[in-house]
Length: 138
Image (cartoon, rainbow, N blue to C red; front, side):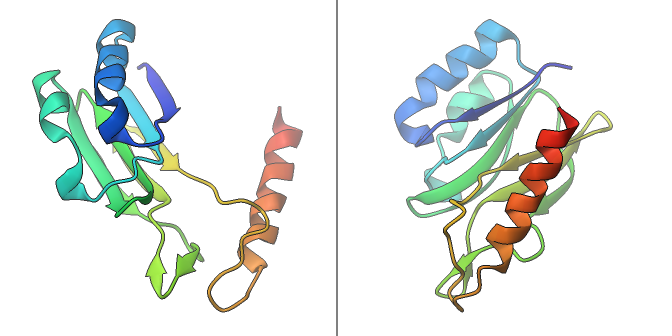
């Protein structure tokens, strides 16, 4: 299975480039970050026409994550524990799904200086700890 990830920085601006890449590189699952649109604004038809299913979580012009896949997603999960929020709205930064038995995540991270609306910096500290573990595994 060919799995790729791309920080698209606005899917509405780059839809043609993304769909072209999917076809040219024969990608089975693409995890996209920073789609920057609501579900009803996502250019769904371009992906459907290319033979892809789409799962997404997006809010207005901020963040947003999505999958484009040749097969339907199973066990779709939005968010993660202690996800950052702004004005009591959880940011659209994480999406998990299973494709042909392979668990995959689309996750857009925040800067480590981010604080939650309550002023807590607990999430960034835990995030940095996770990065340290990932770096040790390389």
